[in-house]
Image 1 (tube, helix red, strand yellow):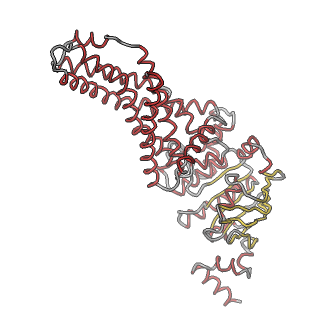
Image 2 (tube, rainbow over the protein chains, first blue to last red; image 1 turned 135 degrees about the vertical axis):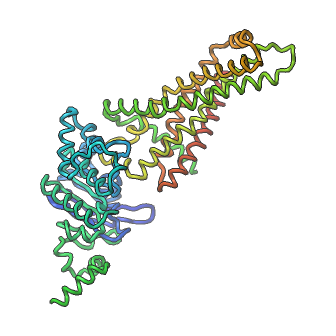
Image 3 (cartoon, helix red, strand yellow; image 1 turned 90 degrees about the vertical axis):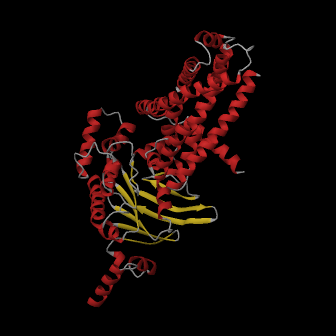
Length: 254
Length: 245
């Protein structure tokens, strides 16, 4: 579990996060949603320790990241898997080498043991037998799945996903969402997904944090979000024609 | 003000490069890869340029020595001195600032744009050590490239001079050995090591701290070439003043 207490972050005169407090629960897909510029990505980078908040504390279990020394932060990062918006695969390495990378860096396993683990996770993301291809030779959806495989290969306790569906068609996006949720439940990890995709919210939103202008204005799950009267949330949810029409049908049926 | 900040940022980068070392077995592989990319990969162009520039230096020297009182051996002497003191270490390094420097900036810059550097950082890897340190170690083999440039420059000079009818083999041999100062080789290789460090680190700094997309990668590569060349010229002046004057 990750606990965030009153986190504030500014760039120059502009305050991006204005005191956010929330928890990200273990074994659940925790979503951070909101419009562009609401502070989602800054929040994620604060959680990852890439940005230092001016105020507030971020606890991994019961240990604040601010109290950790460099070695402790390095140890923590070995427990973190990250799925980047663009995949961030190393383009000079094959898929196998990409997925094996965290094992080579942080474990003392033999080549055979590493290869066995790589094949296991590639199988888990339905990419069995694609080991020798390079990232440029596979589709965007496959790149995301390789990125997930790399993120989970070292059995992380925390999984972070930044806009996992960006640039993907709706069907592939659903496959990626489902995969993230299945992995979260299967390995009982704390997963944090930053997204503004309502399909993701509907598919995997077990614990949703809605940000607006650097403030946490609503928390709930994917059932609650369609029942809330919070105007900020309804404006966001029903900004697309599809969801507006669903809403109209729901209201008529009532 | 920006220049002072940039200088500070460059030295802070160097401090981080030499801290938080990457796992030894991984680092060893990276160093071999960088030697292949940066040093071995440059041999072809270095050989080609050195051979022909050596020939041109010989021909131009010969064409300007029209006084019959000046011995023909001076052609080889002038060729040797030009190549060992300046052409091979300095001007070859400026050419390498274009070839190797642009490659370093664009490869690290592309990694920045595509979040690969963020991926390393999130994994808890010191990305500067992982990316830049192997390049610095690989470039410490760069003096071998310059030694090859010296040798081929003189071979090119010999072939152009002797087979072009400007001098003969005996005079060329006498000129090559005439008042040879071994310290000139020490001077040439001392400055080559300094240039190698500049070529490895300045383009890395440009690539690592660039912001933006593909267009900015191109701009960073251009800036990298400009700044690496300027620093090589400045360092050349300082080293010459310190070692030869």
